[in-house]
Amino acid sequence: MIYRLLQSCFIAGLLCCAIAQADTTLLRPDRVWTGADESTHAGWVVLVENDRITAVGAQTAITVPAGSKVIDLPGMTLLPGLIDLHSHLFLHPYNETLWNDQVLKEPLPYRTLAAGRRARETLLSGFTTLRDLGTEGAGNADVSLKRAIDEGMIPGPRLFVSTRAIVATGTYGPARRNYTSDADIPQGAQETSGVDDAMKVARQQIAAGADWVKVYADYHGGPTGALTPTLTENEIRAIVDIAHATGHKVAAHAASDEGMRRAVLGGVDSIEHGYNGSAATFEMMAKRGVAFLPTLTAEEAYSTYFDHYVAGKTPPSAGMVQAAHAFALARKAGVTIGCGSDVGVFAHGTSYRELEWMAKLGMRPGEALMAATAVAARILDRQNDFGRIAVGLYADLIAVSGDPTVNLETIEHVKFVMKNGVTYLTP
Ligand SMILES: [Zn+2]
Image 1 (cartoon, rainbow, N blue to C red):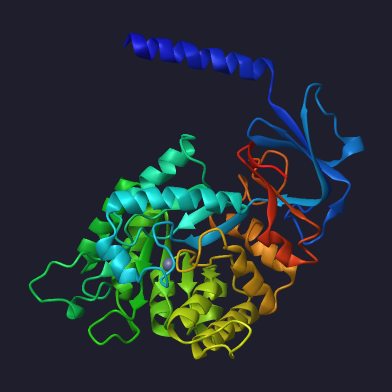
Image 2: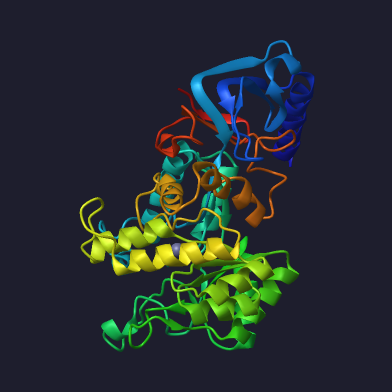
């Protein structure tokens, strides 16, 4: 009790200081890209007070409080922190360790410590927000990881987590058919069967701390190994009802057209992968406001690991051609497309590859940057908190050399990173 009392006095003291003298920083790059549109603004500066952006514009138009810290970013563009809406911090590239072996053989404490290290790498690469879509057998450890980051214990991006994710019984992996039949094989997600059970599992995951509920509408891990729909439309709808009633959104892994169709009709908020989506399904997504996260880099990574694809040397694999086709159909239909890479399948800290893929397949650099900032924030329903450089938003800011709206590859080498007004990387 005395400790509590002392602690609150201490906190009150800190607050007094904060009110008396705000911590202000003036950022002076060559230009600012705000994420409001695709244009850059030469000569603009950004003022940060504590954790928020308090001014943005021409330096002559901004009153800078005396005693403000100044960070010069010569030759650089300041832009909003990048967002990857499909990550797996608890996985690492499958050419290092196969997915089955990660799930079955890597102990939970090891996976959690590794995830902490990857969170730091991710933040320093300029990604200040992740939606982490399932721990793949690491239970609810993502909730603790998020807490440790939020408490400032370890550096990492702002996390939206989904805990264990939901799969139809017997449809995910490690596939039991490959193991001795009397063994209890741990699974990469939580299994469910039937509408009532699906509701229960959704409630359990939300209670455990899931920000988003992730469902698998199809998978190739079933009895035959073929890509088939898994959860029924009614099971998906039951999960969506529970999630939406408590202010949570639902992301659906769906690579088959039928899996996508069921997920969309079931009311999910985003479709992940969508490699075999038809024009009709993408049109339905556009009409219903369902977002698309194309995970183009994951497809490239699979093709490299398992299909003899060599970047720059062999033609794209059939899977990559299919993914590119789906991406084009989604763009044509006017679907909201965010940056979602499935990083974890490939190396953490290289989510920028997804923006480069989207640009390679037809997006302008500014359009790809929007998908990873303002559009991604809108998909999270957090457009008034981050994703743009605007007064009142959290100071999630990064800087790169040159102009990324002209040369997108500058995002491979981020020189400055600030999250919530705290500087993590300086030039
Ligand atoms: Zn994934």
